[in-house]
Length: 319
Image 1: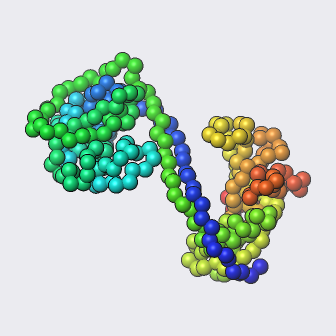
Image 2 (image 1 turned 60 degrees about the horizontal axis):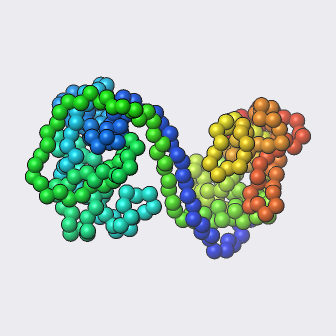
Image 3 (image 1 turned 90 degrees about the vertical axis):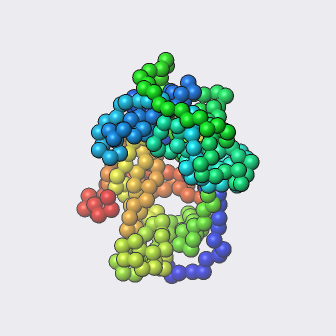
């Protein structure tokens, strides 16, 4: 297939979101539990510096750190940047300043939001204090924000054993990225072909590898890819994993199999779900074909096509 003119590039909003769940060690557990109790803890490093937020290992020596100290809920702005248009999920819904605050007794700075009427009200050296959230659960959001605090009093540190009732043992940290996706020439052609239930890649004129989805250029040779090539529709499972955790907003019963599939004629594998076969019967070399649902813009999943398994040598370079 030769290159063809491509209409205006489509654009669409895209959200990438992942709730990251992690357990906490004794230092981080004490720090977050302390915030719930309106207490800010730091950790003393080998050189005597007090680090806030605390870390579990010395950044200079990598030695384990356990000496907790309580620092003040007041501090000094060391640097700042004005945020005129807060985004969803940020600490404040009105314009605010991102600030690095060195809390009294600490030697490092904590990043958070400062509630200020405008950029003219913010400066390096500004004295601030913590505004605690009304409802606290043991998270950095227990600090609702900082606010200006007209006081020259500087609080020192005092030892703390880090012991609290009902300590926080783990957190869920949601990671989210909102942006407008513009696929470009190569991927626009790929998406348009999918509307016709075709899979189209592009061939590198130097190494002849066919990239699916196409990237517009060969990452190995560094040259543009312009020759469009239809691949598949059948392919071979190269590697796979069994998914046992149900994903949010995904109506698929677990366990199920997600696999890398080398479509016939493609120079690398793409990923897709395997259906139509018990999960414990999926294997490397399994020959599969796409299954489309009415009105879908891409295959819903791949199923066994009845052909004999591919020989390992036929796909080993695509692992």
